[in-house]
Length: 214
Image 1 (cartoon, rainbow, N blue to C red):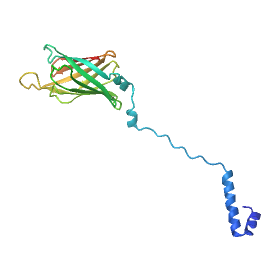
Image 2 (cartoon, rainbow, N blue to C red; image 1 turned 90 degrees about the vertical axis):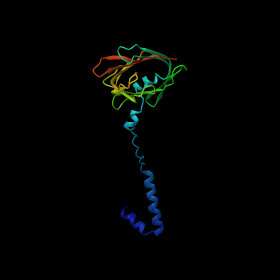
Image 3 (cartoon, rainbow, N blue to C red; image 1 turned 180 degrees about the horizontal axis):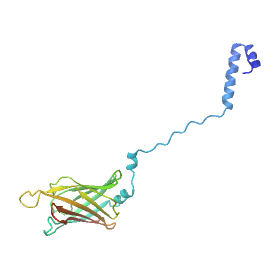
Image 4 (cartoon, helix red, strand yellow; image 1 turned 30 degrees about the horizontal axis):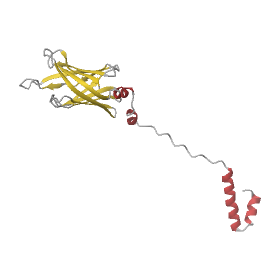
């Protein structure tokens, strides 16, 4: 503050001097440009949230939703006669990023059973994963995964080894490995094939499911 202005203020009563100083401060604040508030940084989604976003693989799975008629063909051994079972139905729905499949008999003449399966693309591991549970066979929960790049129309996954109890009167406990192939042939037809290989034996087509959309 200039010396003359300071001396002039000293000659004013105390209350008038205080009022003058406050008024000058308010005028200075009014004339000075206001500073805009700092912008908040944009929130970045976590890696977990990004992996939950649907990608092309999940969109392929979503197209398989619906109700499907199923024909099962089973050949328990390379030299056995194939067994064909019709009258099966499969309900498919998306649970998050998982294609859930529930299979059951639609024909009341068939023995009651449930088969549950889940197929998903694991973005973190960059591989397809599949698991299934079947009340018709005491072989536990089966888990399979893919290796390398897979064509969109056909997936190949490999099961961990499992023991087959056998179909005769005695428990055989045969140890097998399986190759699981999923073929999306069209919008209305799927074929799933399981190729089994016994220890020291040859591979054969053991189980096949043919799906036709209702």
